[in-house]
Each structure stands twice: as C-alpha cells, then as structure tokens.
Image 1 (cartoon, rainbow, N blue to C red):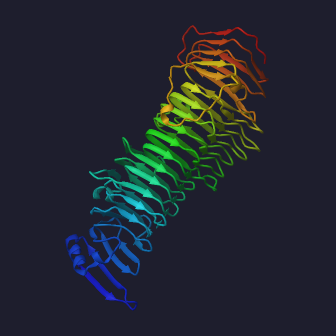
Image 2 (image 1 turned 120 degrees about the vertical axis):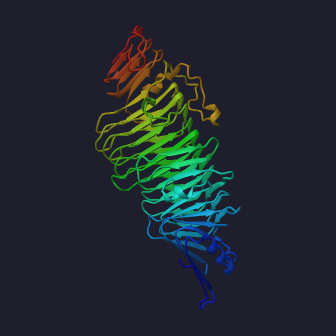
Length: 542
C-alpha cells in the first residue's frame, strides 16, 4: 500500500494539497500534521481515515473530499464558515460517507455543504445549520447520537446517545434530489429553515435511542426512546409525494409540513408521534394533498391538540385522504397509537375533501378518555361525482359544542358522522353557552372520562354547518337520552342511535325524509346489557 503527499503552489498562489490513503489512520494523521494541513483550514480539520479510500483537496474556499463508498472519517472538528464550501465527491447517490467529530466543538455549518452521495455528520457536541447555509446532498444524517462503525457499514441506522448529546438545529436550506433522505436526530431537534426532499423522507427524531428501519420500505418504522426530549418545527418541510416523520416525547408543529403532490398516484404521508404531547399550534399547516387521492396525516401522542387555527388537509382532486387525530376508527387499530386526551380548537380545520370527483375521505378524532372537538371537519364528495366521506369524533367523554361537520355530496350520497362516548344526553341548546373556548395549555385537556357526554340538539340538527351533509350516528356503550329536540331539516339526512343499554326519548326527533333508527341493547355499540330497551316519552315526526 502507498501513502503520498503532494503539495504545490498554483498560478494563483493558492495552496493545493492532496492526501490519498487506504486504511492508514496513524500514518495519515502524522503526515497531515507534518504538512500543516489541519492548522491551515478554518473549517473541517485534522481528518483521520478509518475506512475506505479518501482524497482531500483545498482550492480557494472549496474543500473537496473524494471518497469510496462507506468511507469513515474522524475529524477533530467539522464546521463550515460563511462563504466556504465543503464538497464530498462519491461514487453515486447510494454511496455514503460517515464523518465523526471526536473533538469538543459543536459543528456550525454557515456556508455550503454539497455531495452527490449521502453524508453522515455525527457530533455529540451539537450541530447547527445556520441562517444562510446551503446543504445540497443526495442524503443527510445529522445526529448528536452515536452510530457504530459496524452498524454504519451494515446499513443499520441505529443511534444511541453517549454521555454528551447536544441539539441539532436547522436555520438554513437543506435540499436533496428526488428520493433523498434527511434525518435530523438528537435529544432536541428543531427546524426553523427550509427542508426540501421531493418524493423523499424527512425525519426529525428527538430521543436518546433512535432506530430507523430501511427507508425503502413503505412501512418504515421509527423507534424512539425519548422520555423528555422535544422536536420543534418552526419552518417549512416539503417532501412532495414523500414522507415526513416527527418523533419524540414532545412535538410542537408551528410551521408548515407539506407532502402535497401534483402527480396522480403520489400520496404523501405525514406522521407526528409523541410518547407525551403532540401540538399543532396556531398558524401551522400540515398537508398531504394530491392531484389524485389525498394522502395521510397522523397526529398521535398521549395528548394531542390542534390549537388556534391549525390546519390539517388531506384533500385530493379524485378522492379525500385520511386524517387520524389521536387514533384510528373506534381506537381499534393496534398499529396506530391512541391518545388519552384529544383537543381540536374552535378555529382549527381538518379537511379530507374530494375536490373534483371521488368520495370524501376519512377523519378520525379519538381520545381514550376525552375528546374535545370544537372546530370544522370536512370530508365532502367531489363536485362532479362521488359520495361523502366518514367522520368520527369519539372518546369516553366527548365534547363537540360548536363543531361544524360537513360530509356532503352534491352528486352522490352524503357521508356519516359517528359520535361514540360512554353515555350520551342530548340537551336543549343554551344560547348563553360559549362553545369551543380555546385551551391555553395541555393541562386543560383533561376531563372526567366517566362524565356523561352532553350534546346540544342544535349541534346534531346543524351538524354539517353551512352546507348540509352528514348522517349522524350516535353510539353509546351504555345509555342514550334525548332531552333536547333534534330536527334535521336537510333532505335525506338520517339519525341513528345505538346503545349498549337503554335509549330514552323525551323530546322530538325529526328529519326531512331521512331514516331514524333507534337500537337499544346493541352489541355493536357496546357490551349489550341484555335488558336494554327503547323508551319513547315524546311524539316524533319523520
């Protein structure tokens, strides 16, 4: 094996140097020190090649590293000053280079980082992509958690925090080509800049132990161990037709997350999953719209909140998508985490519309204990053809005061709205009530899950808001009592009530040619009591 150092002055008096080595880290470190290379650079310094073949070249403000696939380089420091560029030249877009920082300084990327391959930057002291920085790579992994050489060489993305694990933050612009990946991993992860990865994967994972499965698998799983760690998005993440995942103990989405696609057949997906609390805050946009069928958004955690005017949009030109807020249908999907408490503010909006044609989509708002849902939910059928979609708002205790629901279909059959708490009492509308008051913090999410759910009769009668269109299904695991009038005057909109025990009707129930179905002792609603019955104490019209 050979080791050589060539140094020369070019015509512009710029010092050019190169080092080529193969598995000679002690000799390489010695020769670089003798040449004064490490001290000459204000940016990445003192490289030691651990695996692969690597060539280093400095030309003006451009530092070029040419590496073989799966090269591993240890650096005493790795930063890029404003106006400077570091470029990794690799075999192809599937090639990777691992850069591990062994010194005490955080990495500050203020200039440009480029590569035709994937770049791993591992620095336990912290990594910051500053305002004005430009990252253009085939893939990026920036982590303050450690990855072993063996896992890197085997393609296993397993990261574990050591004694020191700083933050990763992006204030600049990170861009990958079609199908690229951007993974930001640390106990504290934040994005205030712009991340763009068309048809790719963007993951912000806040934890001290993170494992990412093969991203080529559409069912990629992310395992995060993060007892107190937070992921924050203040900026914009764009992955047209791709996937965005944010994981941690606490998730705050205050910016824009978009997997919107202008291509039929591309359905983007966004997953926000916290072991603690996930908040979509005022002004945030979380969207997976499409020229075809809308994509999917999952907002999951022990506590989930859509605050202020937060928007979730999975609409599509040929069909609505899927929005899962706190869980899936009746909380029965074991693959989707169920929230204990879920809140949707009065100004929040969830859309799963079919715009031109096709059926409206599916919207689930679920809380094992409580679901407080006061905003606007849409799952409308297409303007030219298609039926309305399906909307569920469920929790053992359910508060839907002021909600606006629309699953209409101008050229088809209206959709359904399911309400599924323990007990339901429909009460007369109280004009003094101020429904949907915004919560100030997550501590106000909780309510007594054993409380009887009270629903205003007017809420059911005007369930679809300004535009008519959602047949109402009331399901109670125990009892349903109608003490308030329900008068649905929208044509062909029905009312179904199913109770595991009794249904008691003490007020008028009326529709405009829509079916009224009352089913007591119904095992489909809950555990049938065996003695439940329908008791009618008031006249009804239909």
